[in-house]
Image 1 (tube, rainbow, N blue to C red):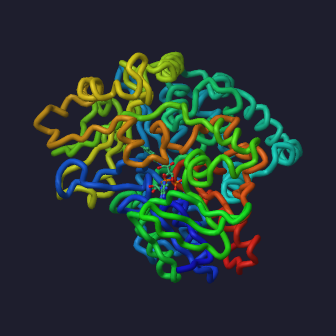
Image 2: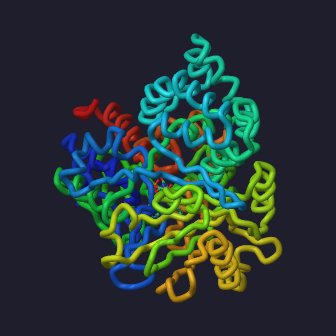
Image 3: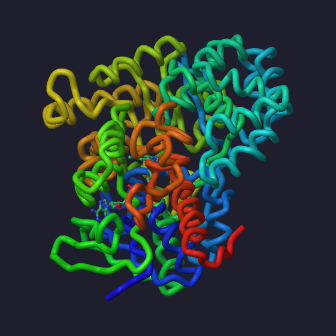
Length: 522
Ligand SMILES: Cc1cc2nc3c(=O)[nH]c(=O)nc-3n(C[C@H](O)[C@H](O)[C@H](O)COP(=O)(O)OP(=O)(O)OC[C@H]3O[C@@H](n4cnc5c(N)ncnc54)[C@H](O)[C@@H]3O)c2cc1C
């Protein structure tokens, strides 16, 4: 059997890439090692029948507004999103809180309870940068990254651009100190960033903080994240593509320096007439499936140096008989109906310290929590009147001492500790309200999907040396590789991890151009 293109891995990026190519008329095969499609878009009844838990991603910020949803007509393929009105609450240890809103006026009013000056600054930032970021950020995500010199040249042209360049060089904490006076306002915005795995005091990431200040959206996929993967699979198949699950690719077959197909675990060889495209992280793709001996030495070194050392998440999935009722709601009632809650201590310093402790292998004993209740806005994810909650607490993959193995001994005790932290904010969550619970420590995350090396959710660290033009490696950020006919399309490429299908979309564009396929999309 022969195909034009073989895509290795049915993560949402692999599926999106496949759907674009299939719709362009190519003969496409997607091969997935697991029994289901979606990779980290995974919904499962992890606790009790009828309770659908999102094992990894919950919020798909850029899917419904980005090009992929529209181009692949995902609504027709059963993918729908709901937009929570009350987005996120940051709750402080003294039970005051800030709830995040989409509308700038409403958000500014919320901030003014802490500082009138900060509310004014937020409005000004929105006026000055809101549209600018909206109109530049999405196009930058959904196209191959520009070399830094070109990107800087563009930004240098305007005052907003020059200011952005300076913020880009700074740390998130520096940016927040420059902009805001209230510690709570700073903690609120900083936690929006650190929860994604960005270090609070990392130089070169100030601009991401600005994005997180201004971009407030939390679309959730009705029925759970797996529905996005199902819809993408349906789009692939609707255009004649084939998706094969339960087949692990062992080798990428080569003739000279050209990829010609794949070999799966049962020894089957399948030919790709035009190209092989990998959705799988660099070390496995290149060192195992291609083989170091077939790579230029300098490229192999870059692959070996690709890192996933950042923080991971300790996750609890809960089936609840009722939603949490926060003490904070006494002062700010919408806290109870916000889609998610962040509890990150009371000061910026505490967040920075906790981040460093995690880097050194210590799971924080203080709350570094994000808690999300999809069922508040999508009741289809639990039996009538019941709820699911997902609790994320920062955590290292390797404990010091104990290493990754150490989680075996720690997980039950740490789960109880995390629950106690949560209960100190939401005292109604007594044992009888928790119908069942499943623990997912960082090693479980990697075991379920070995593409998430060290349990790092974004498929390799999103640090300045591994972002944009440097992702996965400088000179190879255009989805091509030194092996002819071998392309990359996963979250380890620009624009990085997370569910937006940017890498799948961009890789399809490059491949369409190289093979003169009809580029039917904008
Ligand atoms: C706990 C957690 C919470 C998260 N929450 C969010 C969130 O709320 N919002 C968000 O945007 N992002 C979130 N993320 C991150 C996001 O889910 C991932 O970054 C993203 O889904 C990665 O997509 P991908 O297609 O690049 O890779 P993956 O989804 O990892 O897909 C790769 C696929 O390749 C397959 N594969 C691997 N090796 C082989 C092989 N040899 N042969 C065949 N197939 C193979 C794997 O089985 C997998 O299906 C979260 C992640 C985690 C872990």
